[in-house]
Length: 165
Image (tube, rainbow, N blue to C red):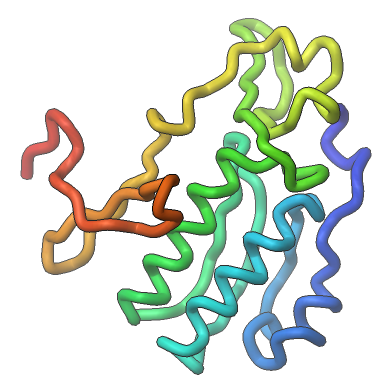
């Protein structure tokens, strides 16, 4: 599926739904399948950081990236959770999806798509195991967190294997 052949989240809608949060956003460029993830992120983060400001949301390497200002750990964990959940969610429809990466030598976007929205060519691409995606974050204090899909939350974790300071 070409990059923009599906409905995108409208920045104006997010501005209307979350006054102040997206007012200075430059753009939001992701599919409507990720809209529930974006809404859950803001709804989860705002009680912890009422001054939350989102600058940009876009897709990179098949998953969502959120640029926002918040020093509050609970809000940062909500952001990390949203980004990781996008690796399991079709960007077009919100169903279970897989990050599909083009084979070597093929120039194309990595995409998280369900089988229904992946083109026949994309269905043949390797599926990147979201468990091998970063899916982890470290706080300034050194504590690691990872996304626990079953619990649908970021949980304290040991550092990634092979990690050293």
